[in-house]
Amino acid sequence: MTTTGERAGREALRRWLVDGRLPEALDAATAEALVAAAAREGLSALLDDAVEREHPAWATAAVAGELRASHRACLAASLRRLDLAADVLHRLEAAGVPALPLKGAAVAETLYDSPAHRAMADVDVLVLGDWAAATSAMTAAGFTRGDEADHAVALVAPDGASVLELHHALSSCPGLFELDREGMWRRRRPGTGLVPWLPDPVDGLLALTQHAAFQHGLVLRLGQYLDLRRAVEREAIPLTTLLERARPAALLACAGLALGVAHARVGGDALAAWAAQLEPHLTRAQRRLRAAARGPADAPSLAAVRWQIATGQRIRLLRLTLAPHGWRAAPRRALSLAARVLRG
Image 1 (spheres, one colour):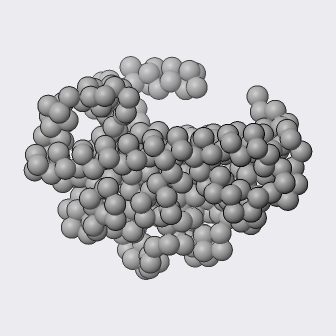
Image 2 (tube, helix red, strand yellow; image 1 turned 90 degrees about the vertical axis):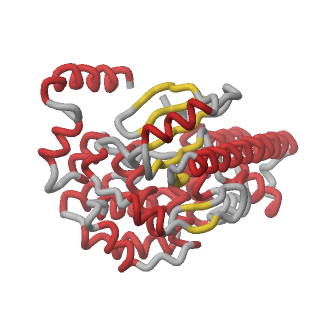
Image 3 (cartoon, helix red, strand yellow; image 1 turned 120 degrees about the vertical axis):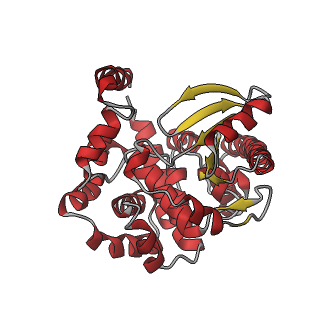
């Protein structure tokens, strides 16, 4: 259960993201809750830099010290994970398998002034070539298999401390969305730091919106929603190009929903403009869903979000959800999904 202090801290954090100004005065409890919320939402390093610039009165020596320690830890962790992403991409290249970084590994060095500003729990890489060759290359390098989902497998790095999520698709129900593997590889761009190459900005933004909307039902950390804001602010992305790639891939709903909800969570004039331009491409029900998902407490269920995204493909969604490997296995699959839901 969220306490009053936690809600106050999260709201102070959200207001800061929206208007760019730290609160001038906070009581000690709310200041501590703000710092705790920043840690939960992956924003400790960004908040630390803002405090260093603005020196608000509530940032006591204890608060500032906690933020600085968290900042250093985020920097060290992000650099380790970026180094791991680079190593994985080079190993796959050596095995003749094209692959691209996703999520944090794809944006930390381009959308943020410091890798510390984009906290990462793991490393995500999308395989665009031979899946068997990719997994073989990783196991040969000492990675061990962990949990497996419809679209990815978790691989524990040889050091035992880092996790690689190796994707063969961007989200669950892979057959619901068209993935232009050859085009994504052809359009890749050079990296700017440790990661050697990155997705094209349009491909990267569409991947982020699919992850936000379909995979997680519009429930993300604020730091992940900030990826969307930074992408539309810092990348030169023509709307016409995004529409051209989103339509055949069935991703217009993901883009419209994710960008609209991101604006409600983290603000940004550019994000508001993009959300407005995409709104006419949403159905009436999708627009209602987007309007309702204003904050974490208002988030609709994952099933409801996926149902709306799959407008026009709902029979296919049901088949891919319940029987991805054939209807004979559907009862067992349904029980497994039900158990997962009950476990939370």
